[in-house]
Length: 360
Ligand code: PLP
Image (cartoon, rainbow, N blue to C red; front, side, top):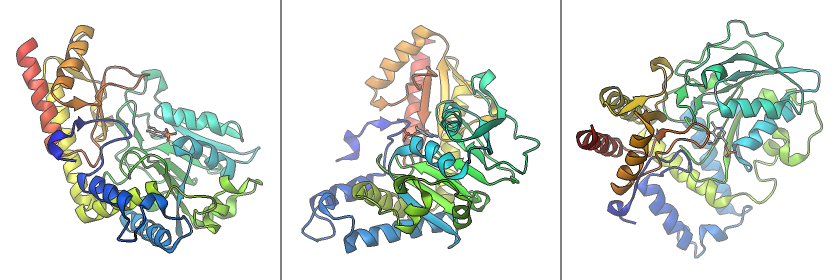
């Protein structure tokens, strides 16, 4: 696939992957590592897959700066299954978990937890349609089973830049901003991220947890849904999504080669460029308060509905795709994940400027 024929893609996930990852994944579909087999035909209990699994887990630890007190899992079921597994494993019937309600995904995670135990909202920006981050809770009760946080709110375009220390086990959904910047991952007792944004292709979810957390599991849980069983079986309790994990490995190698520092620098430049244009351009409005803005998902609207429709068509005609807002939030959202280049963002800004000249 030639880059020239590629759309400039701002999809929120599944999202663009680095060109080299696509090329290597495509080659492996025809013949994996000169093995005479496609990656799609390789068994999940083969030596070849053992090596993929081991390297991918090692790379995750390396990129997160974590040691052997953490376990890395590749699981099925996406973000929503983690909304279930977290309380199923760690929230007993009479216990309470605290949720920071910063967006639709964190809210949904809390609703899933209510099937298993009690929940309390530690802070919320729901009343403001999640267009800003809530305050970090002043007093977090020590006896909470855990505190759940969504580090980046994909739908509303808000992101926690600083994460204060927490005196209860801290669990985070990092689906839409893992590896986007340097972060102290050791603050977290468990974090998870769907693959289809910064890690690879849909079909697998990364879970990283402190080994000590396993001791807290009291409930009897079917093996597939138990972190302890998944750790014991090295994530291969049933047939693994081999291709999705291989694509994740390729993306992790790309992330390491580029370095998270360099990725963060470019992510900050990309976000500054687009937010700067939104502040300047008379036809668009950024939707999120300055100090809550995400560098991964930039939400904005046009001055009015007609301009919105016209710009949607105008940008599509100029090879830009994926900027429509989430069905529940409307307007526009450009997702600037790690594989989106500064050049892609410049192309969008150019189109916005051209549009302003034509329609102002
Ligand atoms: N959490 C976050 C932050 C997300 O952005 C998403 C989806 O975009 C999810 C969870 C849900 O993931 P899934 O569709 O895999 O259940």
